[in-house]
Length: 451
Image (cartoon, rainbow, N blue to C red; front, top):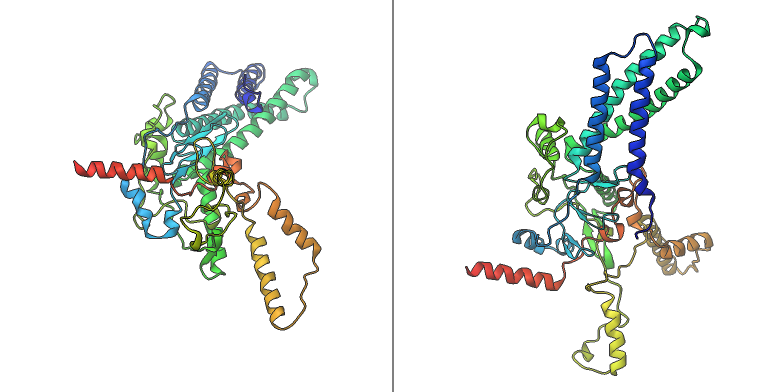
C-alpha cells in the first residue's frame, strides 16, 4: 500500500470548496432581497457549477502523457551538435528514463517520468499541466472565474441592498444566520475568484507567448547569465575549467499569438477553445513543435548554461602513458577499481554520480581572493585572509547538499523544484548520450542508408 500524501487530499478539498461556494450561495440568494432569484439565474448558476466540475475533473484525470519508448530525435538533430564541445554536451537525454527527451519535455518528480511540454505539476489537480491537460486546465480557470464572478455580482447586490436598508429596524431585515452566511460566502467567493483571476491572467499570458512556467524560468535564467557574461568578457566558466561563451538566444517557440493559442489549446477552431467537451490533444502532437526560425538551424533550447553541464567525479589516479596497456595490479584491486568506475557511468539501475558546483558568487569571490593572494605573494607580502567567517561559509557551501547553481531562484523566488521538476535529473539533463545508444543510432542510420 503506497504511503499517504497530502496531495491525495487536493481533489476532495477542491471538490468540497466548489460545493460550498455553489450550493449554499444558491440557497442564500433565494432567501434575500431585493428580489428572489429568478429561474433563469438559477439555471445559469447550476450550469456554471456543472461545467466547472467537468473541466476540473478533466484536468485532474486526463493522462498528462508519456514519451513513447521507441521515440528518438531525427538523425539530423542528433548530429547537429558535432560542431563544438558545448553542443555535444547538450543532448536531450533523461538518465532516469534512459531515453531521449523531446523538446519542451521535463522529468516530473511526482509522476516519475518525462512529461511532454510540461508546464508544472499542479498540487490542486494532483496532476501535471502538460501538452494534453493544458486545454482542460485553461477552460477550468476560465469557467471558474466567469461563474464565480457572476455569483459575486449577485452576492454583492444583496450586500448593497442591505446597506441601503441599514436604517430600518432589525426585525425588518434577515436573521443573524442569514447575515453571517451572506458575509461569509461573499468574502470566500471574492478571495477565491481573485486568486483564480490572477492565475488565469498569467496562464493566458503564457498561452499567448507560447511559454510554460518552466520555460519562463529558463528565459529569466538566460537573462541572468547574459548579465554575468557581460562583465566577464562574454564567457563563463563551465565544468572542469572549460570556457563557455554566452550569447543572446531568442525563444524559439513563439510563432504568433493566434498560432500560439491554437497550438496550446489543441485546435484551430476558436469555438473549440471554450467548448468543455473538446478532445484532448494527442501525444504525437506534443513531441515536435514548430519554431519561429529566429535562430540558426540546430540551435537548442534551453540555451547553454555552464552550471547545467555535467561533469564526472575525478578518478583516483592520474593517467600515466608509460603504464598504458599494462596490468600491474592484483585481481582484487582491479575489481575494486572496476566497481568505483561503475559509479561514474550509466548503468541499468543507477544514475550517474555528479558533483555539485558552488554558487556563482562564492566561486567568483574565491577567484578574487586567490588573485589577491597571488599578487601579495609576488610583492613579498605575507597574506592571510583572517576571515574565519568567510572560510566557514565557503566550507558550508562546499558540503551543503541541495545547494549550488541548481538552487538559483528567479525574481519570484521560484526554482525548478517548485514546478515539480526533478532537479537532480533536470538540472544535469545535458549529459552526453551513452555510447551504446549512439552506436545503436549509428547502426540504424547505416541500415536505412543501404535501402
